Structures are given as C-alpha cells and as structure tokens.
Length: 66
Image: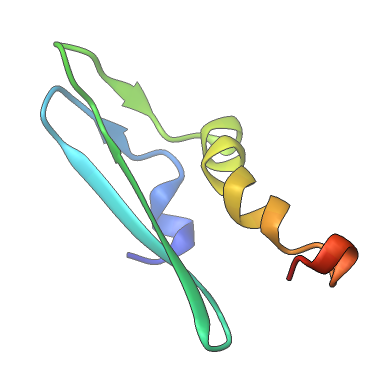
C-alpha cells in the first residue's frame, strides 16, 4: 500500500493495516489493528504517531544510532 493511500483509511473492528517504510537497505513494517469493537481513521496525526519509532532511530549517527 502506498503512503498516500493510508491517509483517510478507516479501520473497523478486526481490520488490520500494514505498511512498510523503506530506507535504502533498511525497512520497518508498521501494523495497526482495530480491536474490541473500536474503529479509527488514519489521519495525519495517526500517521505521525506510527512513524515515531522509525523517525527516532534515524539520528544521523548521534549517540551511535542510525
């Protein structure tokens, strides 16, 4: 699924969304699933929160992280 097709996607109970962020030879798979009767729409803020772990890892070599 392309990044632009994620925004606005609504997940209802039991539905799952997976997206792989690729950075050269490194990639991260992010998955979300609506559970317990819940639902949500992936918007800019949700997308930002899902990307936090990936973005925090890329610190341009700071403190030995990359």
